[in-house]
Image (cartoon, rainbow, N blue to C red):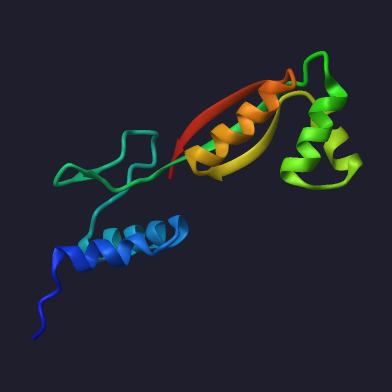
Length: 126
């Protein structure tokens, strides 16, 4: 029987994308019989390591006085048609990004704040 070193495990996990890591965590939770909280409780810990990974949502609270610049930035950053972007900007508070990594959420928020939008970044734990 071959023994896998900790370094090999870390190397393998480092090559996975966040979705693959999340799927692996869910599979291990099922295999080990670990129940996930469904009531907003903090994530379970095993040996001090969280089993849930934080993800973030970005919410456009208000476009601010530079509505057109916010629309341009949204089209550049998220894509979509002019009608789609206009609906996001005119529709009141709207979720722009869901289940994103912190770096991507913060980058989007910073770009939109730079053109005058009011943005919220909220943490979600799945």
